[in-house]
Image (tube, rainbow, N blue to C red; front, top):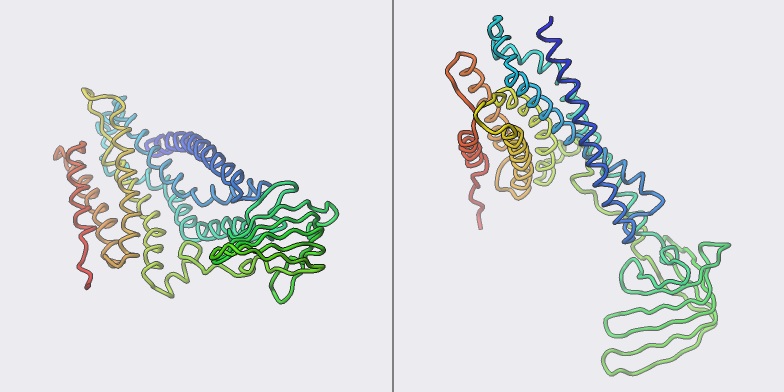
Length: 379
């Protein structure tokens, strides 16, 4: 059908161009941030591309949601602006008839957004955190660049080591400053090597001196040694406890704690928000010939940011126990769906209902008051 095919074709072109632009912008921002983390020692410089890929994959559902919303708003606004809407309506089409081509175009993208939010997001976040944690928890000798002072992983020691290029676990001319609660220790040695024992790592020093300075009475104690062992990276083998972001969706459902329910509300809310934004775009698609041309785009951006912030704020309220999971989902997403359906039905019947900044602002304020009315937490 010419009506459906023409709309889907224009939506496809607009969506593709929007995705390319947004991916380029986000990728550039993520690259700058990742390079900054690598320069500060939080990310392995050789793994920048992997961290960038996992981070980009974790934000892909938001990019697709915004691209879909921008594509539908721009396409329908262009149809109104060029008076094509008048032609379609004069030919017997109704406003609700636009839902079918919109949803037939949007459903594969909506399905992909759900898949990304429910399954890909926790996996990509876990992979990115594993890369950062593995680099952060590397051995103290592995952290040190030859000829440079470097702080240890626990922040209590400063190392200076000339590495042996033949082995990453050996070094020469070792200098260590260790700060403890009641004393400061300065240790020097000709050579040092890493030795592992019972999941603990020890730095074995040979032919050196050890100077202890008491922080209480400033007394000094100097000793010489032919061999000395000091423990390093005592938490390098410890695993971080799993967080809600890295937990699978099925585990979130099986163990419905507050943090898990908050994360689950966000994952489901991303997909539901994408669906509602398609409905909002159809209700929003109208052009005031006397108004500013770019006002519609700014208004659409305001709606997107507000909706996304409502989803994030709802997650925080669930995690804090100020609102239950199901009342949150119904009050935010179902209320927006019903409001859009009411506006579309009124415009379909020709009642002259219009979306403008004032009316939409009042609607958002009303929904926000209903959605985020805090319940009293017993003290």
